[in-house]
Image 1 (cartoon, rainbow, N blue to C red):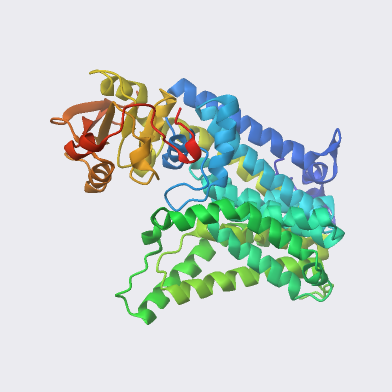
Image 2 (image 1 turned 45 degrees about the horizontal axis):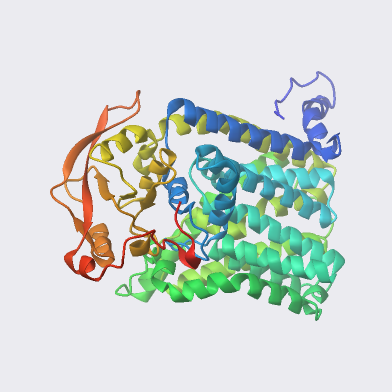
Length: 543
């Protein structure tokens, strides 16, 4: 899978010949099959499977926990709800819930889900490009081009959860559209509706890809019949039906839906022009940060193959125009939203639903410019493979050591912390002001772990319960307020502890404290007979 330039030959076309010789493995990756499957798919599957196994083994060997995003998933694993807290959609958590029923509550389950969704993305991109009529080399270049995007190649493996689902289900949405354009059957329309709902349930901002994709198809005379067909009502009906439970839940829980609205940096006191200028600047920088590496890789591939933009090239076919137009319309919609709402904070990963199209469009462009374009595709395949392989050891290091900021929580000795919390007796609920507390469920999967963002907080608490916090003298007011609303208060004085960190950390322990909780007097007076907490929606009891 690696690409290494060979020494040029001494005669005439030596540079060209050596380049072709050096790309023979990439040619094999693009065109060959391993059994019934394309070689590129098999190699990506092998890479993702190895990452799943190696990272799980390393975590078990080192005794590490998981980062904040995965810890949040650990909090929610016992509950199958229509919606969850923290402004997050439910699909990724549903998948984790299902995996946990099969494999238990452990790091392997979390890694298996993450890398399975990434494999879904890879397969969907490859299949979509083939369904659009592109060659195997183009499909492989589009698929491995995903690994030239830092938010996918690095961030998705390192820390992200719901953003991983964005990649997987946006790619699946594109495949469903390609299938719809080709077949226009009742099943194809139903599948597109299902894929649309899945994309939105993966991340709410995926709706921009849905709108951009439909608008792009409508703008093309050769394709718009697929949307104008009366059977498109089937897609709409299926999407509405699948989205209905979560839509209803969101309407009933507006505070949970909007819990992280402050991350967009909307300040109603700020002048509109100032906010628009700030938002536009952040949007441009986020787009640049996302696109710079895949664009540079493609530009380098063109340069190495001797491509000249001044040459006359064939007109772009409709299928390629669809990709570029979807990309342009999606960015235009996002930019309009930023300017219209006063958003002043834009992160590159928020643009994934739209910019995930970029490597596909670049690969399609290269096919049109064959034969040099095909050589460029092989170089993109090589670059994506090399980036993925080189980043693998970095992900292993991160799993063992973490980095700075919130990822430091990986290095906490959670079994030791659990023993400290239960020194005075058993604990059924551990509460903190951050999702990191979910790591305690790796020690005791029957433990209820809660932070202030968990819906139905008051119904989930099971006694005995403790409140635990780190690196502060007192717990944050936000969690105390949540406990007060739930009818609980501290029972006595906090117990100061030193929470051990794993060997090899720059310090042996972190300061922390915990305190047991009791029901308030008013809550005791009105409390029903003790029994199993109702816990979750729909009568589901916590584990």
